[in-house]
Image 1 (cartoon, rainbow, N blue to C red):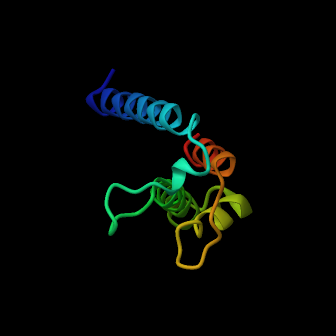
Image 2: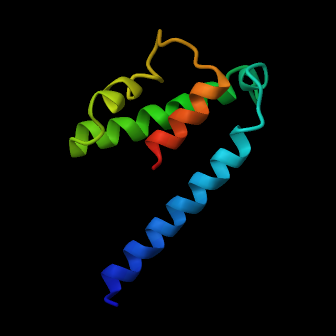
Amino acid sequence: MSHADSTLAALFKGWHDYQNALLKALVPLSDEQLTLRAAPNERTIGEMTAHIIGARAGWFYELMGEGGELFADMRTWDEAGAPTRNAAELVEGVRQAGA
């Protein structure tokens, strides 16, 4: 295995591990818990999750031309004025944007 191949393999494993940890933390949360924030001037858990989804979908859709209409929509989830997503929507968004 070349150095580039081993680096890529480590990157994909790290992504998979991060994805699983994120889902493990999100799945048990209620809609109410998603409105919690660490400090008054910080984003809520739901807003941070929507930002992760929006950024991922944006990278794939805008930079790589992947994801079609689904990612075109999801890339706006963290924009000002975007609708608040419930727990089930956010979990599904993480799953779809992180696959």
